[in-house]
Picture 1: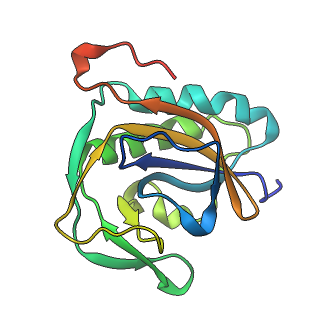
Picture 2: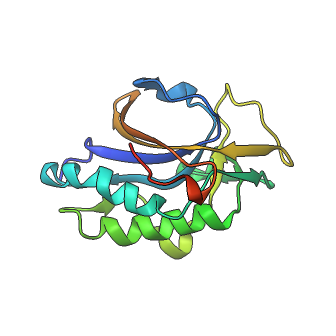
Length: 168
C-alpha cells in the first residue's frame, strides 16, 4: 500500500466551509474524528458513504475545550482535548465502517478505537485555549498530498436531528 495515499477525517469547529485545498502548516481549527489512514485505490470510492454513516443521528453540537496535551511524533504536536459523546460516537462508527474498506490501515493504530482521544490541533494560526467552546457544524473528508490537504467531501450537520436528511 502506498502511504502517500492517506486520507484524514476532521470535524471543523467553524461555520465556514473548508476550502478545496489547505496548506497543512496552517490547518484551520478542527477536531480529528479519524486520524491519518490509508486505503487501497478501490476503497476510496467507499469513503464518503462510510463517513456519512458515521454522521447519522449526529446534530451540530458545542464542545468545551479541555486541557493541553501533546500528540504526534515524539509528543511535539500541541492539542487541546475535546471530549464529547458525539465525537466518540462518530469515531467509533467511522472505525467500524473503515474495516470494510479495501486495504484500510491506520497510520497510528494506537490512536484508534480505545486509544481515540478527541482533540483540537493547535496549529500556529489557531488561537483557542482551554475553556473555549467550539460549535461543531461540519465534517470533511480530506486526502493528504505532501504539504497540502485536498477536500474530497464536506457535510453540514443538521441543527437538530429533526432537520434530516443529511446530504453531502
